[in-house]
Length: 294
Image (cartoon, rainbow, N blue to C red; front, side, top):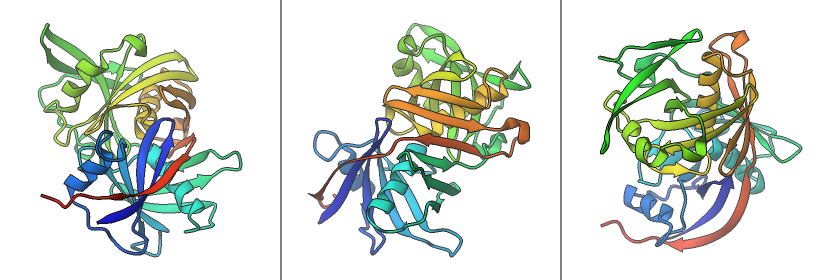
């Protein structure tokens, strides 16, 4: 089967976008993995799929598959690419687009400067909804919130990672570090991702606070490994920093692939929406022959 695709990126987080607005391709997990493969396929952190609106309250449905072929709830950088894609392809001319994702509904806005703002909805702190099982863990108070000490079994011995836990439609564990350049992302990331306290695994964020309005961030993404940027990870990191009393309500996040701006008005309550603004760029388009699923 031969299908058309568009390659896009947002702050270095790269995607293959598929248009199923006129019919579904019916891809298997194996075929999603092939598309994401950087040696044999196109290469991407995630595969994004555009589908028609399932209800009158939204404009489109948006599906996300990780590089391992598994479907996930949300992807912020992907959402920005999504809205640029549907505009460039003439699928909509609306400035504000409402999109159904697995984790709910998000609102996307294409700005005059070319950057895209995504209303990511309110963060989720309730452990069962993250989901997060803190059984056997003792929280450590910080600001008006807490971190949770995760025991990690490294070859050199046990270490403790005090993480803040939040969901942005997908689960995140945020660890504050002194410097992202030397943070143990490759060693600690997979251990945090697969920690038994997270029944659906978790994205691991490594957060360096530069000042109250600027941070640096690296994220080890669930099912993808470390990526150049993670939109929901940036949102989660800023929300965690604000709740821990370390950040102001608007923060610039420097990821390896570029800069994102995150705003969360905690002064308006915990259910205030998180707004993420950043770039979305089309790289190239093409067609690819998919192998038959085995």
